[in-house]
Length: 308
Ligand code: TUI
Image (cartoon, rainbow, N blue to C red):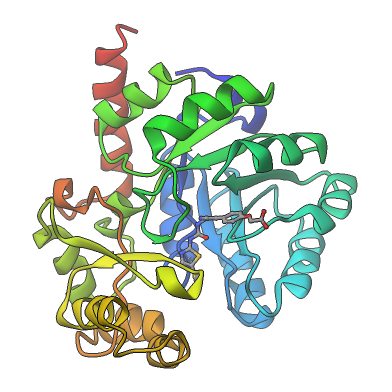
């Protein structure tokens, strides 16, 4: 399945694994890269030494291209921005902000920069700043989300920029990939399905929550803090949502309660205090299997649907 994305990066399948904060580490990233996609290591909030170690591990596990996602709200984003240059990471994706101030340095270092954009305006700015491609991410995604849907955002971004567009948000099988191509995307980013990959190192409780989730089991919390996040519906996320709706939890209290909640979900499987981020497509993820098998299955289906 050749597109400008496969050609730009020298990969077999135009699929990026989401750079999921606290989740995306070298084992999963290398598995996705070895299967012909682009694996991502999450840079968000990770200490520099940990991230350097993860990058080096990934290089040992794969000789294929992989990337690092830089979560721009992270307090150490500046250090991470330099680390990826020093470690000669071939691909960077960014999220949760405008990476404008880093673009020149990354471009001069020859890194391929592919920002996540929630709007046409940011996509155009990123193209002007030298982005190699953009990831147009719809509100169906897990974690920190924008407002527009994948179906509405992707074709508008495709019309607005010349660089290739990667679709994200609500894609977990060959039909989603084929639909993304119909919208004009030349690649996809997939997060939630890879939560159920054998190589994904999250707590078994987290994996099982995703596999057991049905169509109505994702919920958005934190809109009033300015950082809306999509999670698995649990007692904890429902309590946050109702506190937000009825005013019994203030935005400041919300920030306090959720501080460290991602780590509690990913490492401890803590259902009382953990935020189990997932996309709205979680209901379709039914099987724990190797990442490479997921990719082969999805692209076989997409190619059939697209008549290739
Ligand atoms: O970044 C994500 N997903 C994430 S980050 C994360 S960790 C986190 N922790 C606490 C609060 C918030 C997040 C969990 N999930 N996805 C990519 C993404 N980027 N979604 C939305 C955006 C985005 C939003 C605004 C990108 C750019 C942007 O620009 C605003 C501007 O300044 O123009």
